[in-house]
Image 1 (cartoon, rainbow, N blue to C red):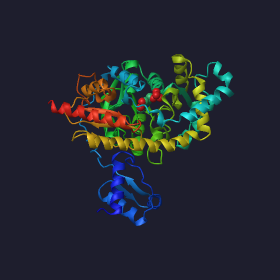
Image 2: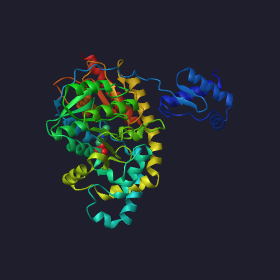
Image 3: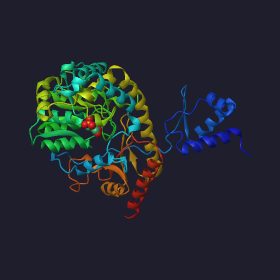
Length: 478
Ligand SMILES: Cc1ncc(COP(=O)(O)O)c(C=O)c1O
């Protein structure tokens, strides 16, 4: 006969295994559960302790019992990469396929880094958009200023000041997403054929921007946790005529790495000393899992030549097409480049987002969604550890919502992505995070990136199982 505490422990174990309590989630308090189940506090405590001993829960003093990542896969190893060489960027066709799949509900969209609607504040957005249509009709019937709506520029400048970057609203240029912010920044300081230092693996949207501008990429190997190391950049600058450097210092895409402040300062001053502008992509800076927002390079090195680029795509909605760029030394040039590119960004999303920033809804949403992204990442990492072949290594980001997986060789990530697409699952194969054309060299040929901002449901479970089976089949075939 089993004791009551063992019966309860078994039920809770089942709930954890079925995903009713997810990895990282807090279980009800001991007293609360005792009351709900009409059991004694001692019985509930004994079952929690049992689950802790069995590796299902971890106890945090004062905060309670949390579901543990039982199948935490090993972290990424440091990947020795070939010496960096500037190369022409091409073959981003696969990225277009992923972008299409992200907008097609028949696909399980683990490819493009696009949050599922459940992570975005639809109701608040609807209300702010409707209110804008009602209250500002005249603003919606003309061209907005090329630099953007003053209401939004003011709110952005205020928010940036809260995080240590003191900028004036006049310095903010509103763009059609961060992608346009990056493109305008590159245009402002480079000519076709110039060499741009970037991270490796690199965010593939940046590779597209380099391809569009006819620039050469110098892809510098990054540390999985710390991002680009100052010593690696220093060596590259001594060797190549670098005209600009693009970095995602906070929760990079795809590695999820977070650069220490001391490295940010070192890198900014190293580039300043050589009069090389730094283009900082801070798309994920607001999405850290700990309470403290990491500082931007702009905040840490206000006198350096920095283009700060960011977006509301990952926090409010990608369809707003709303981003911004701040480069105090290049403001007039950026405004002109924005004007000759597409005149201006639509006023409707700008005014609506200005409201969400002003009334505190943006900040409240961030507080909520950061935890949701953290849970989603932990749950998928856990499932990868449980289902994928031994030898699979996974990044351990402290922010954002993408995971970077190193699959045991000889798994071919391009083949895996094709096989997965045939089963209506999109994943991003590692090769598109490298400027080298697929096949030219197998850089990241056994890596994939997974978008984890997806609903944790049976469909996701099936998709992860399918991916794991496809990996096993490839291994079995060798
Ligand atoms: C690092 C990074 N920068 C820029 C972008 C592009 O953002 P937007 O949708 O604002 O153009 C993305 C989107 O995936 C991203 O991950």
